[in-house]
Length: 228
Length: 227
Image (cartoon, rainbow over all chains, first blue to last red; front, side):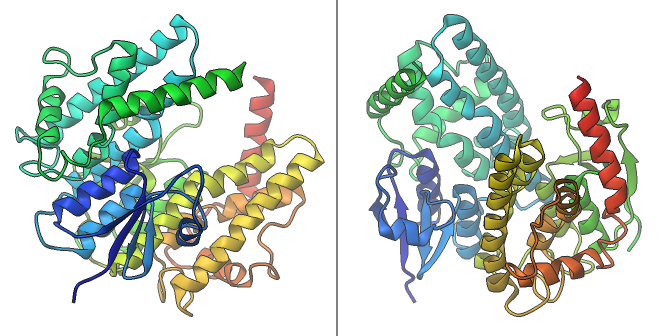
């Protein structure tokens, strides 16, 4: 029986992109319902009354919220295609650990970067981002075990968890004239990023860099004007 | 089951440390509990968790696993003794994980905010937020438990552990702030559940005794005021 899958989201949100990547990896057909996070629909508020946020996956009428919870749900509810989570419990724990690190500690640095006005403060945050990338380079070497992705031969949980941020990372490269990944500092990640961008399940999900550059500038202007 | 080489690095007061200990108890897995000295971090901790330098850390064989709920999931995946900690149905699993994230990201920080709030009005506002959260969790309990004793059904599960580990802190906050948070009238199911959870065989020996935890909290507060 064909199941009904809907995704409430905004195509520029990295959290929404994660879910799209997972759905594509499992070749699941779904209806994408564009939501405006600044003007939330009744449908979104009904599907996620607690946090009122996108993405929300609605599978046969049942809502599932929180991007990484949704990715794990997709992996468990559909068992066609390769597994998204590693099968070995220790590898699984490692993937979950790094995904949580990326969300809780590392990517929030990009948001902090938006609000700074001095060169000194900017440099301090840039240094922290680069330090985080060193840790992630090590994590890549450990998790991939010489294979193309964090997940090994196939795109997996941690590839999705980090990969969804690539478009925003590229936007900040343009705006701040930095280069996050190169063959000298983080060769593993640099090659991984290229592979990810050309993967069938991933490439059409990633928003265009220029679009995100405009959005980032808009957020930055707002933050600077409200901080006075 | 043969005793495996399992260590938990932690401290008795920490609700996060309670989580993997409860999970190991459910699975009847013996472990060595290595308590960190409060105020300092051992070499073993720094080596096992170089990114966060925080407890709990589980060391299984030589491999460290960090972050309390990740450790609980790991324990559930490695050992099939006792009973399953995560629900078996993917949707029920997603619901349990969603609420556990809500508890860690929103609810427990709200509980901590009560003791930090300055002035009666701020304390009252902070308490009201925590109670509103408990009302949401009451609703979640009704949906998840499906008429049984625990979020996990007949037996303690993931969401019971995720919330239950904070019960001692909740009681201490109530006593020290002279406020009622877990109210029999507002959240009758959670009120009953709290009793059952705290007296469960897998929980009772690892849940700190309220008086002891309150003394510890007072020491912490005094220390933070002095520095």
